[in-house]
Image (tube, rainbow, N blue to C red; front, side, top):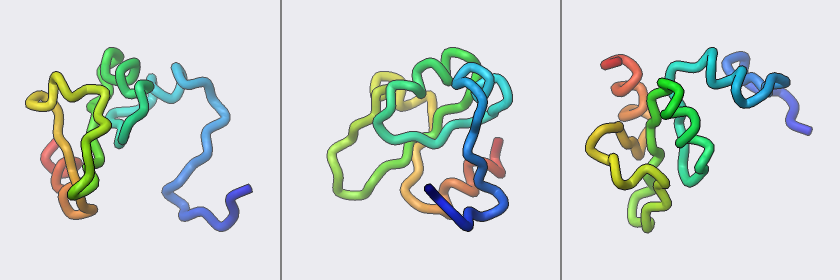
Length: 81
C-alpha cells in the first residue's frame, strides 16, 4: 500500500466514469482508458519519454492534443488551458 502521498494525490474509490465526470484533463502514456476520457470531454495530455518509441493510443489525433516530456511543459499546458 502506498503511504505518505503528497496532499495533491488522491487514490480514487469512485468508478472510472465518476472520476471522468469530475476531471478536466488526463495525463497518460499507453492506456486505452484515455480514449473513454477524451470521448467524455477530458483533455488528454500524452507523457512522452524522450528517445522512446511512442505508445500513444491517440497517435492519429496527435495534432489535436498536447504532449509533454517534462514537468515544466506539463505546467505550461495546464496554465495555457
